[in-house]
Image (cartoon, rainbow, N blue to C red; front, side, top):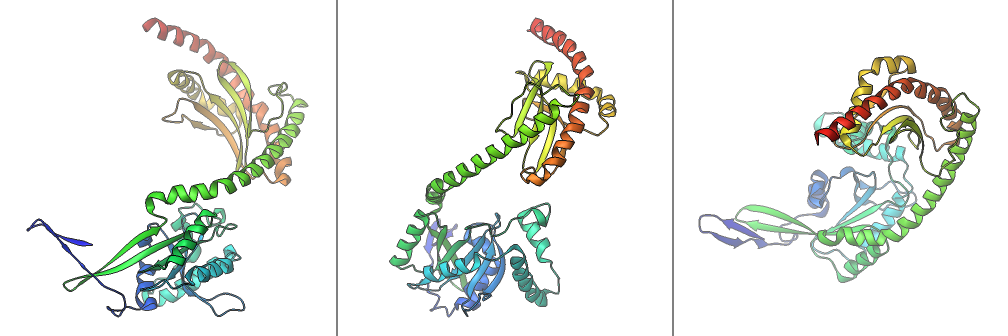
Length: 386
């Protein structure tokens, strides 16, 4: 590391030191530095405990425990001038211990940490609120923490032994996320500096290495999940379409069950369709404007929006009018927030569709007939002007 001297237009080497020379300690110094500035490790981390020892039948304790932005637990092991031979084995044990921590246990661990810190600041902080803010979530209930085998490990030291770096690379190659950070203290006059450098995987290759290692496992897991969802959606659409065929609504009479999360039917206007959406978080009825020209979609959307009050009065509910700014298409929809992949909710969702699909079609039937004629004139005028 060099210091730039602007006056002389030269660079001056800084004196590299060891932690031992500077009389720095692992717990009192390096651990504290990272606990209060975890961003030095290259990403946003939320430190939730120091010297965590909440493991059954063992007195071992890990240096720092953190959460990343995806809700994964991050085990951070610090060593000073030498990584030692057993640091990876030690961290993997801790990761195994932490794999069983539940969402509530993580909150308790973090709250305990905050309560200790509060004694220094006199500012009470609620663990749940802090996690919600850190993860930029709307509500604590929608956050998932410590999912499956998602635990990560970070190793911090001034020097890494070959057996440690080789093992770290092997773990990454087998889809187990770990990182090695080299920390080096420097001295310039009376000023002290700390350089933190990720050496494994290098920042340039990190995404590629981790992505390739995870690719096969991800594809297998995704394939199984997709098949499961295909089967689930097909079963739901089969039930719903049967119910709709026995109702006054004929819109979907000739539509077959689908493995997709949506089914659609024509509205009588080219490229303007009625769609039913069935998903994990919500189900939706929508009128989707997907004509070839974005200008035509905007024309239809604006025309219908002028009749918004009459349409919503006929429908009996407030609709969401979404022009999809920046995109070619537009949509108007009505939705229910409910977990569609819980089959116990299907009865309620099917009843909801059965109630509102006929009303939705009826509310838009006359306005769509009117806009169809208006659209013909509009397109004809546009062609003439061109």
